Amino acid sequence: MSTADEIAQLAEPIGGRFGEFGGQYVAETLMPAIAELELAWRAARSDDTYWAEVDGLLADYVGRPSRLYHARRLSAEVGAEVYLKREDLNHTGAHKINNCIGQAVLARRMGKRRLIAETGAGQHGVATATVAALFGVPCEIYMGAEDVVRQALNVERMRLLGATVHPVESGTRTLKDAMNEAMRDWVTNVGDTFYLIGSVAGPHPYPWMVRDLQSVIGREAKVQLRAAAGRLPDALVACVGGGSNAAGLFAPFVGDASVRLVGVEAAGDGVATGRHAATLGAGRVGVLHGSKSYVLTHEDEARLGQIAHAHSISAGLDYPGVGPEHAFWKVSGRATYVARTDDEALAGLERLARTEGILCALETAHAIAALDEVASLVGKAGIVIVGLSGRGDKDMVTVANRRAQAVTP
Image 1 (spheres, helix red, strand yellow):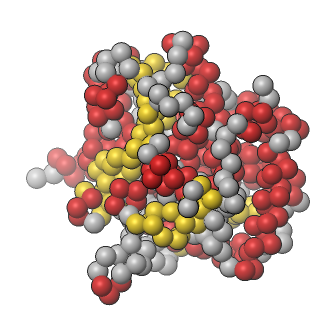
Image 2: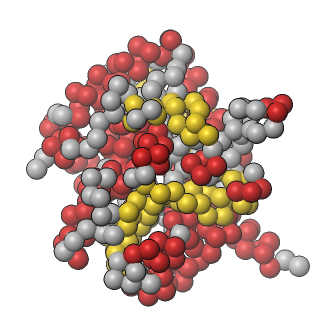
């Protein structure tokens, strides 16, 4: 079966929406660009020549298929058979490159000569800068000033790759504000610019397109586990910020009713403290960055309904919204969403490092932290696939500082 045929089997949003979620809540000046993008994606999605180029780059440049690794020591600790889908082994160190390759090929087909992107943890910014260098086009990245500091290594990587990095000082100085600035740039330069969104967020067709491009994760995992264990998994677990890693893993399994889908959000300092990024668990339905989904809002009378500040130790989960398909999976009951705190994520990172010799990203560590709960649902013979979305190099300063604080009297 061709890639185009496999992609055609994934659910298509009806009228740009997954149930009630999604849509195109953007300025009128952007609607022609949105319409142009949707037409281009519909054409590319069913075009074997498009997928031949994307699949060729994913194999020869990114290094796909990524490994599905049976984590035996971790399995023994949590009480279930755990497999890790190793997106951390991709070129650039995370799942983000999958989407960036696909969108960059699409941008070239559309005649766009400049790429822009937003980034939080910096992995999407690095991946965008990487494909811009590969394709020989200029690239500008918007990044919250707070994230520029805590992800300094990735900022330097972007600059070495030739990208211009714009620290965003407005608002909370994190991912939400970076996306605001990127959308302003797109409005201003829509004629020659392609906005390469990094997650399953934003106006239609971005949530659909990014999910399709990231579905290579789940499509590979399904084939690999059948080869390794002869059956489907009992559960999938992945971290959820905007939600592209989880959507890419989950989407090919949505029709397999026996497979539990578990997304893990960032509880930060604890949901009860208000300092968290558990959008699906503690948010309300609203509109953010052109899409209707769950969002975090202020509850006090003076700011009622305004978008609230999200907090997580992981910059990639520090976002007050979530992709609309995740919202649909939540309300339909197809997926379950839980949350883990900063401290629990750190413990998960340390556990994976100690048992398997793998240093994962702080985003992924939230999924590791939920494994005990998922294992109790599937039992010792149950199989769980974890989306290991990225490696932890970028987070080592944050982790070291946090560990030092823990031992300081």
